[in-house]
Image (cartoon, rainbow, N blue to C red):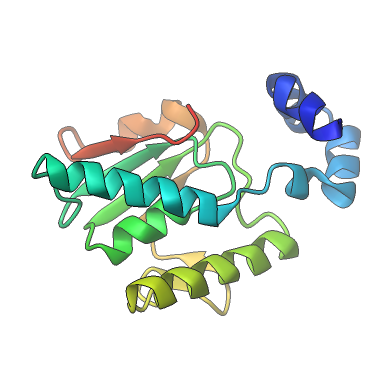
Length: 165
């Protein structure tokens, strides 16, 4: 029931979360990260479909600069693309929810371990596992929404992805 409410009233919940400090603190402590936590294995299945369709049309993610719109709190698509040889991956979200608390950092470590095992590829060049910092040369998270896209050089994006928008 609670998930149904949050899914149907997502915009209201996100606005309240970002604009009302008291509510934001309560939601963070109680449940917000859980309600909006992404199932990275489900996103991984979506990526596998994307990759299969891309191959059927002779499109490759290798050496491509990719922009994802609305990743939420999951970088599953980013990790998959980087493991497949993408040159740079940028994510943009109006309401960023990644690496905001210890539970999300722990969740990201699970993501990293899963994708390193799946692709037999180390992600150490992209994410510092000690302090959970993204290497902005390869993996960037733009936190103010599409307004900050003007800082990206013209014609530098090869592929635009969005799972939820």
